[in-house]
Image (cartoon, rainbow, N blue to C red; front, side, top):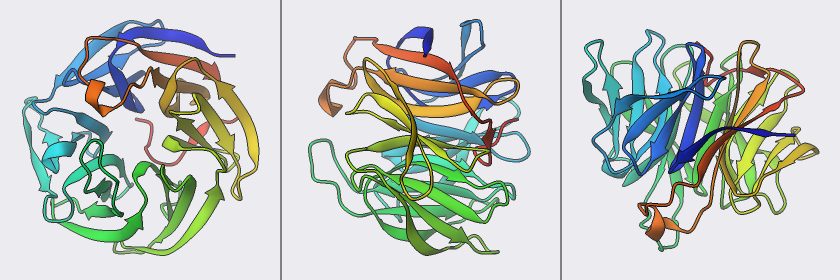
Length: 281
């Protein structure tokens, strides 16, 4: 059973539990928002981009924001200013989700696609702490959420149009090798994902309006049905056992900037706490 924590959003994405609150990108408003467990929210950062796609933090506490359509990874400095951490335009035309490993290596997935066009094969870029970037994977079928295991040995990516979760081994220098299907999802279209201590993955699903918990191999362990598209999910809270779900009515890219504010943050108790990366800080 889930309950609504916050309403009136455009499209919430990329939830992260950080400093006692859930932070997320509010697409269509150029905002990064934080909400506490009482439902009190606050705009934390305003980002001068059409869509601040996703967020995460470097080990030193500086916020990273994916300025997706501009193919930039931005970094917030201690004075609050946003500077360019990495330019990614030489790797792909646009970028989407992000996850930061313990060493500060940052993975961002991207693709060349315009609204209404057929999506082409996507990539994953690695941005090292000094801001240099290189491609480390390709053939990703519309990459969305990503997660890294606690030992920093494996990266899992949601391939939305591939209807699967794909895993890679992470080498000592950050490269991704040995791609393999972690779970085939049948009719599932995975968006945002997170890992739990039982080794399962939660994934959000927009067209099927649900969040689903699956084991490696694809066995479905739990499904939470919603009344609108589920864009992302994240385990957080004091013991990291609260599942936060970001949902909204999806009408297509052409309506992204409409005035409708159907976005919500919902919560439910999870059977196992979150682990790995994106990390809790």
